[in-house]
Image (cartoon, rainbow, N blue to C red):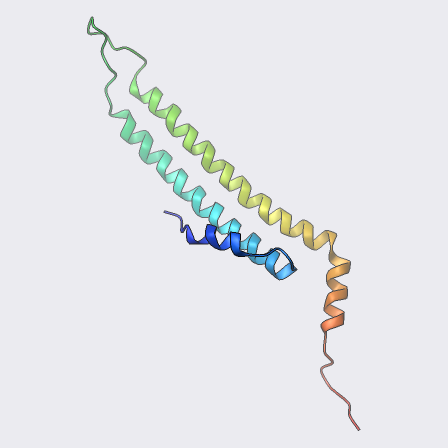
Length: 124
């Protein structure tokens, strides 16, 4: 099961610096990846569990609906699609970081130059 403490930590990160943004993106991406794996696994388990349920019978003793395998597949597929959405979310967060670096490169370089200290200080 995914660690829910990460979700709480996300809300505590103030997006006021590139370092904070990087922490936020990394944590959110990790949460989505964990959730992806959890939902993918749950999808498989659920499908197997639901396939074993026999269909209900009508008053005449005839199965009321299509077989359990088809219904189980439909339910499990919804979980699988939810998992795919989390996989996509993780990829989009990585893309957001790359776009930030690309679009704000001049500002990032300027910030690095302002705080860079000379390696060798010449004094009198």
